[in-house]
Image 1 (cartoon, one colour):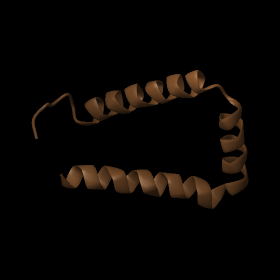
Image 2: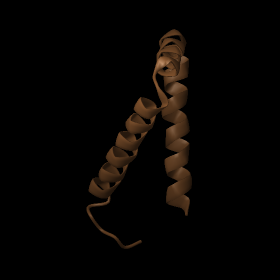
Image 3: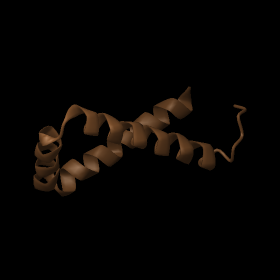
Image 4: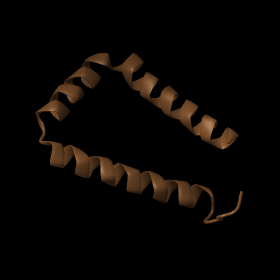
Length: 66
């Protein structure tokens, strides 16, 4: 369970870095995403989830155990 909290904390750090370093670029990107149809955003989200799961599998060395 502590791994889950650590992962969520890292997500907050990375998201916060984008907002801290380049708030204007982040705002512009958010506006561009709003202009996209839901199907494109959903497809992009699915790809991000798949890449995240693949990265997690590779980082964990393919070990399914705790």
